[in-house]
Image (cartoon, rainbow over all chains, first blue to last red; front, side, top):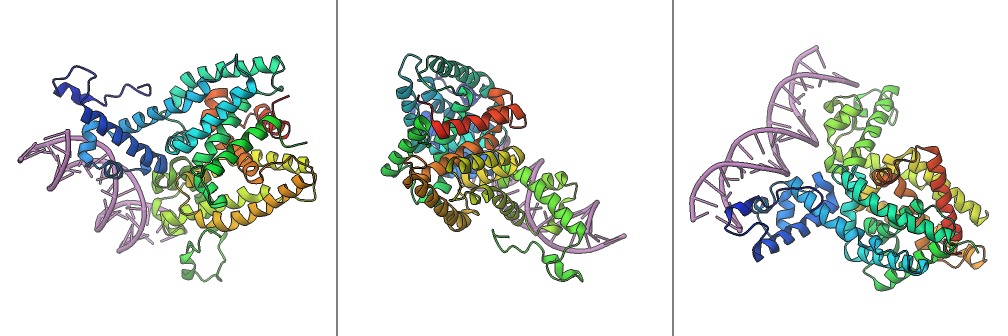
Length: 221
Length: 221
DNA sequence: GTCTATAGTCCGATAGAC
DNA sequence: GTCTATCGGACTATAGAC
């Protein structure tokens, strides 16, 4: 719960439960709602998605949805938070003591798996950033900056030791982000051009290998 | 006017002008409106932007805006069409008879200039595709497919002649799209991580050079 | 061509029965 | 906890004066 201290659980007071304890039914409904929110917010943005649509997707009534989350904004923030944790995991795993090529290959593979398995999460993140990152802004400037700073140092160390070429770590990271997320965010365009998505395992493999081949060895002989 | 045969000019009949002729004031207002629409649709999506905001940005009243464009949807379609023309130009210029490295360097440079000079156009395109490309879909499948097919053949030819390495042309094109547009679409994230945007000429230069360096030569020594 | 006023619709949120 | 009904505000689009 990093995005905000949103009182998504204001109703706990009404129950006899201890604080921070939720019934199995509550957890299940909250999860259903978050998944529905992810799906619709990611496709239509904050204002484009409606609570009616989300409630219908979660097989609940609109007032019942608002029983679990106090407002549309609160639900959006929780969905965003849900996304960020998933999304930053691969970068966290980048290990200074590992072999650079192996480490970066693993990063690309993991990120492509996320684009395949959680495309909605990627699109929600993309929508929020394109809209100006009004809610995610503070998080990006603290949590993400700390993480990228750390990883830029690792890339700089590898570069200094001659293990990778002399490259600007910042732009290399941007490039890795851009290329891997592109397959989720621009799925509609990719499907229109190839007739395939990452769900096609052969296409998935070719995409991963093409990216790694170009990033590692370039295209000029 | 490729997106749709939208009757944006239904009012021409009221005037004494010849068909397809508009006064200087009409053209100027239409341009103001399209630019305002680009700005707001690109930031908030179709539903997220309001005609009030767009009219205010264009210094017009809402009914006056609707005098020039018959509906919100029609305005959106015209703005999208406006974007596509700008956006496809650099790829069109890729010349089979030129030197591959020079040709691709020029493409990257031009695309980065577009990301710097027309970030709104890039974001509008991104929004539309993320939302499922409902309006742009038919265009992508015809116009864009024809163009990419042509350019994939050029890349395949270069590869066969040993001028570039053996790479999958489709994924190389996706990679070039992803990396160059990333700087416009994810501007908020990039600014949060670097404190800079492409408006900073030093940053712009470093970004361009980093991309070309990695695409051409890779990062593994 | 441009405005004010408003019709008609949709949406977020609440009230209150069960 | 879940529902039906509804309030109040915001938005697209139109009517009609100038």
